Image (cartoon, one colour):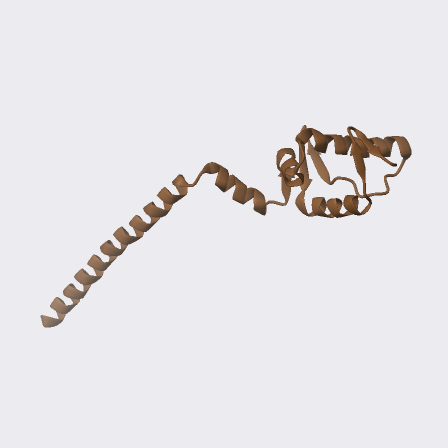
Length: 131
């Protein structure tokens, strides 16, 4: 009989521990969810964009400290060189076009910046000067 009370007591204690731990875990999960809801959406998307290898036109313009129109003009100037003079010998601005959306590879963009600055390229409007 004494053994049965011991087992019953242990089961009761175990049950109380499970209930108490579920309240503690629930509170912590709820607090984490509330903290996540308080984080500005812009901060979340900014953190995600830093990890993503592709950037939008707006992100690329900000990365290069240029306007979106200036980035488009660089793309037009390099494409005009290809059409008019044949092969473009330098590294082109790395982008993908999906429908009407331009995406830029962040790592290749860094390589392009190095090449363009080493070659002392000059872009004037929609023209690549000196080529």
